[in-house]
Length: 418
Image 1: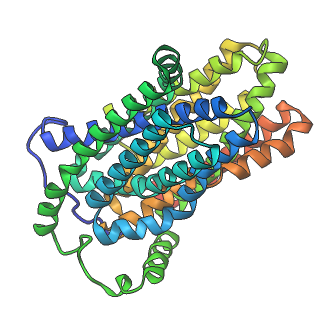
Image 2 (image 1 turned 90 degrees about the vertical axis):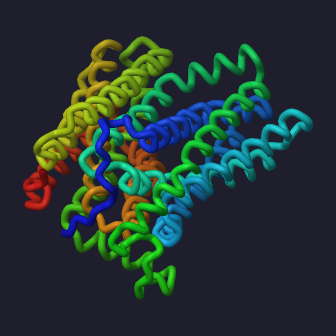
């Protein structure tokens, strides 16, 4: 696998360069906006209608275009460049949020109208996620990618941790309109910060090696062929294939069992459904710690770190089968959060460094797809296994992840990764 230069070396310390600061601030704000808006949207739809199918409809309206458009968005990133697509997606978010804010302030929008606007936000997310990941190696020196990824993903974990409480508290204090106005303001600040990087990345491409998004080759003649080239590359490269498979399996084996099985576990063993919030806060805290730790102390042997991270997640899932107290469950779920976040930082930074620049949008869109597209299957698996009890659910899922760790360890491409 070839490693192509992705950024000019910068002489300053991490975040000492203003471009890096704008990148981290912009992507961090965008992550916080996502966390806050999801809670705002859920509570607003509940305000419009009774709990039930309406809430699910709106959340599906966000998730469906996001999943469907991710891979075409990866092609777009490689065609137009990550900076342009990131900025465009950010400003589309701002425009949709402003439209929603106007409807909330001056009309009584229907659930259908809210769902349509939520679908546009899902489309913006589909473009933003792979573009934002591909933007990092275009701005960040290769040696600092792990650290900056840790900061950005730490902001995302922090938003997930405090977002529900902040959004709910703001709505209770100042109402839906004022809270949405604050979210729009943060989204606009993120868009401004990230838009300033377009010129920086364009200069870097001009001084590069001709492999940037403006380079023309046979695969850019046809979008379908371009997408096929990205998929083919991911399949042929053992390192990329192993990492994508691990991410997908972890998503399938963890998301549904923790959310669905965790709710049943809390009700049956941990003193009531209210304890689920405490347990899930442990996951958020663990994710924040894992992201920041991976950024602060990048591992020297990345391959075995990937194996260890997968194994830690599997061990945590299996351990949930035996917990009977809230404190123990919270500690175990925190371990899962640490492993997931640490693993995420290492995998993303490794792919940013090693995937050729002209293919990064497509390959990184596969990473995002592996983290979001399999949620429905994960919920189905949890539903199928739950009748056999939470012990069986967590043991089966934990064993599957531990088996994945063993398979990943057999890959020479993973074991030799530094």
